Every structure is written in structure tokens, then in C-alpha cells.
Length: 421
Image (cartoon, rainbow, N blue to C red; front, side, top):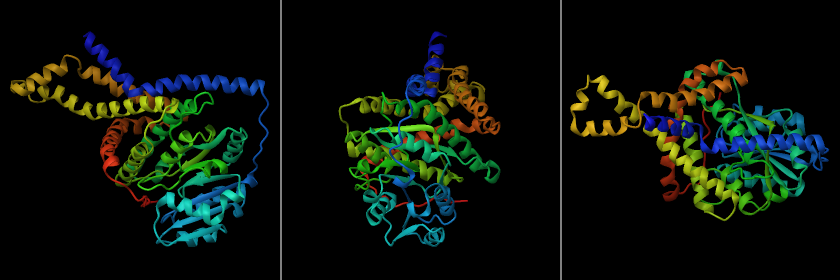
């Protein structure tokens, strides 16, 4: 019994996450520090204005959604500050973008998102004409308050980049069943990751955020000029650009829950798997490219990687443990007559039983969903959250398979957009 109690506690901690626990505590410290600074210090003077910003959108076959992305920022900045690079699109992406009145560059060869961004920066001369550049995905839309919050953070001279705060487009009724399940999982993932992890990591006293998401983020021009956006061999750009900020000491990464942008997530399982595989591969390729260097960033990154691999193995092991524990009951104890199985069952049941998995894995995982459902007033999350464990297991498997692939293969960055709606 003591071993099973200890196992339950350990599993619950791994399910919630040691890193989440650590950064939640640090996030609380940041909240108190931010509150104190707001009360005792005046807001910094906004040294950057909206006229100092440009928006660059890289798109590959984004005809259904590109106008929504453009129209979310043109009322806030003006059409003359929005630029689109079509990365060898074969649909009407270029025509739709031009109809909105913004500047458009058509690339004949598919260079990938990073290559398209680099081409757009050079062709439009953005670093010479503007003091900051926002990268916006063609399926994303900026909230009306986004630039006000971003400019407030960029008023601090040591801020090199502002990470956008992602929220899902919550329209479950317009999605098929699989799309709703993915939407629920992504809503939960984004909420937990940003509130319990990135909020603490972007505290001015920490500054160890490992990802500036490429869907809607702003870089100061002088920092962007020093970043190698499109190195060889990487499938995505945002992890690499973030590591460049840290390794070259270009400044802090800032994040505010009020600098919101909305992103459209995949609504088919095949698109979801393809996207998660791409994200994980890009993450491990970035680690391979940059290696390890001395500093707090890699201290926290090392802790994160250890837990990432450990928890991934755990989530993939849980179904097998459950099957081993349940098999004797399903076979009327006949399974215990198998010599090889009896030893395995005895070893596992000595430290884990059904109650251990229930209270150590299932309920802690579902509790996080319940808190989100109540906080966001989305009762549908209570139903969708029942499927979070299968998605976490799927994510874990994809993530582990990406590790060897990142070391033994290279990518050209070419992309295929998921099915849009």
C-alpha cells in the first residue's frame, strides 16, 4: 500500500508537470511584481508607435483564410503597412491578398515559411523602413488590443520580441466531431502552457521562454537583423529564432495575456498529426543546430527536456499497464497461469493498481480540464476533456519519434497548409 500511494503521488505530479508547478509559482511571483510596479511606477512612454510597425504574412495556398488575417490588422495599422509573401501558392492566395489592397510578393519556388519571411523582409526593405516587424500566420487574426499591449511591452528597451498570446477560434458547432475534439485539446493545451508556464518564463527576472510562436509575434528590427531566420535543415522557424534571441543575447522576450491573437487549428486527425510532427521535429532540429551553452536558459531547458521525455514515456506506458492489470479479470484469471505474464503482473501490481491510475493519472488530468471549463465558462470542455488523455498519448508518441529523425534527417522547410474552413 505505501508503494502504491507513493506511485499515485508521483504519477499525479508527472501528469500535472514539475515544470508547470515550478513556473506556476514563479508566475505568481511575477503577478505580484507586476501589480507592485503598476502601483508604484508610471507606465513607460511608448517610444514606438503604430506607424513604426509592419506586418509580414507568409502564405502557401491560404485562399480561404488569407483575407481574414489581413483584415484583422489593416484597420489597426493601415493597408500600407501590411505585406504578404505567397510561397509558390497554386490557388488564388495572391489574387485574394491583392484585392485587399496590401503589398504582395509572389515567389515562384516553394522556399518554406522561413524562406518566404526572409524574402519578404529583403524585398520590402522592412528592417530599414520600420522599427519592428510582426509575423502573422495566414490563418491567424490579431485582437483589436494586440498592438496597444505589444507597444507597451516594446517601450522597455531590453525587450527584443513580444510573443503573441494564442487563443483558439471557439466555434465548435461549425466543426465535425474530430475537429471538436482537437479544438478542446488545443484550447486546454494553449491555456495551461501559457498561464502555467510561459507567463512565469517571460518574467523580467527569469526571461527563459523557449518559444516565440510564429503565428503572431513582433520582433524589434535591430534584433531581427541579427537573427538567422532561414538556416539550412530546419522544418520550422520559430524555435530557431527564439534560440537565436537567447544565444546572441539580443534582449528579453515579453508576453502579456492581453496581446491576443486567434489561431485556426486543424480539424482533421491527419492534419493534426502532420502539424504536431512538424512542430516536434522543428523543436529537436533546433536543439541539434544550436547545441548547449552556459546560462539559465539551458538550465531550465534541461529540466524541461528531462520531464518532456519522462512524461512522454509515462503516457505511452499507461495503456499497457492498464491492460496488464485488467487482463486477469478479462480472462477469468487464466492470464495468471501464463508463466511469463504472472511475473510481469506481480511486479506491476505491487506498486500500481487501478486506483493508482485513476487517482494518479485520469482524475488529475481531468481536473485541469474542469478548472479551464469553469474559468472560461465553456461547459462543452467538460465533455471534450474526457479525450485529453488519448491526445496527450498521441502527442507523446509523435514527440518521441521526432527525436531520432531530427538527428538523422534534414528538412527544406517546404510546407503544406492543413485543410482550411
